[in-house]
Amino acid sequence: MLKKIKIKIKDIFCNFAPLKKYTFMSNITFTMIKPDAVADGHIGAILGKIAEGGFKIKALKLTQLTVADAKKFYEVHAERPFYGELVEFMSSGPIVAAVLEKDNAVEDFRTLIGATNPAEAAEGTIRKMFARSIGENAVHGSDSDENALIEAQFHFSGREIF
Image (cartoon, rainbow, N blue to C red):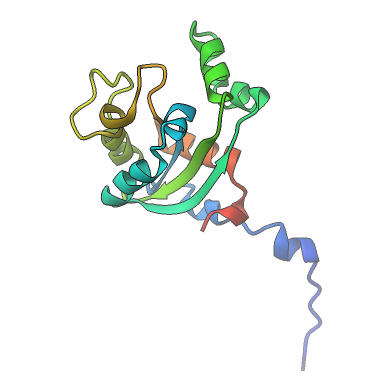
């Protein structure tokens, strides 16, 4: 005997959220290639370094943050003296947002990008190779597993992450 099953369209399309499988795992991180590196033509080279580092790209897009988006994304720094300049810079041109996957993703990616100040970054790191300065340091990288999820969901819907 067949049972009648009632399925709502929204259950099929609106509840698709692959990010949920990463909730308690340390295998994703979020990055942005910042406006300085995009303007300098470093997108391909940076993505190449990311791939060489063993990361898989799970989501990727070229976009531009509005001032409101930048304020919200960096609100944790709102009380810091550099906040205004950071918001202005991050909304000044296109960025590349990406979700990356690898075991120990956050820690490994932070090693790959190097110190915030490129003058202090190790040779071969993304910031040493592509950053202009401490303020225009080429890339953003999540600082924790929790923030990686929050930042990924800020930029991507569940349907955009594979």
